[in-house]
Image (spheres, rainbow, N blue to C red):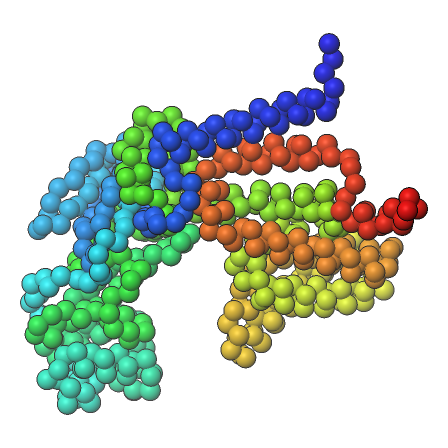
Length: 508
């Protein structure tokens, strides 16, 4: 017996939706994943990536590991050290990881991942005072630093005020002695500040850590500086002169010692990828402790490197935007300039905010259409014409960014998140549509695209949607089943009810 295509679609969609809901319910009731993001602990996953090139001979890589401090708790940590002998030991009360290998003939990467959350108020404990050592300086550098100290000598009795004034003087940039010190390549601002504090006999130490921002990749360590006023430590950001430990700053190490040491290798680097999530702590603990035992977790997004987790956090929102476009086109009957353009524009709106994104889109597309009409008189080939439009769109976006920055509208600097190639094709498609169908059709499809992009943006920005798509990607299977069912719809669209409204009057 032959099964009709319509029945096949219904059966396939039913199986797909059932599978997606089954996996979701399993993660909810068996693994304890919450379906709602409310009242959950913010957990940060930090993945460090150690890269280096071996030079021949034995290898030894040592990295200082963070410890719970400044209100941060460490849930668990994991190491990836395939082919290396690995051990953890204490060095002067600080945990240190060591990777050992006899030889290696290729560039390699080692990984260290940990989950952290803030458990209490953020503040550093009152650690012992380090010994202040006089820096070794050349005569000209010593004279310049002593001149700066002499300028601030009235504040020497108060280390806190002295440090504030020193950082403020550095930010102003009009002191000749500081400008001379900064002009020398060997003088980094942080090293110079530490040398001046040492000459002023003010106890100081570095605070190395990471500013936690969701989705950041290839982030490097940042360094704050803290000084002791005789009673307690005070932290400063040397780049902004702001006092206090930032709430989103995860402290990796206090002190001036190196965090990473690579022996037997060169061109070493330490980079970090960061992902923010909201889950009960017990759920995260269960997931990490049983990652190898639970098949579903072993093949889940959580098993990916953090850098890829951050990428998928955005990609998993695309099916939601696609569903919005399908509903609007199939059930409502709204016409758009393509299927994927509204989705990509919605993704861009997430970065630029809605109003700024709409403004930039209208300006760029409007000016692009005007330029495209001029190019049509030149009778260029299609490839050359598209390339010219892409170049002009990029120039327009650059000019818009510069003008907005000069006028103080920093929000418009996110114009770079708009997909340039899609904008260029949109301009080309609308110009051809204008020539074939007229400006009325361009207005309908353009406004329909912006309406679909706006609705998709509003839905994709909901915290619950972000939570479900990332923690329950199995729901994308359910969306696939729904799309398959919508693909068989052949009934009236909502806009057609208005179109055929006069037929209803004939029955009266």
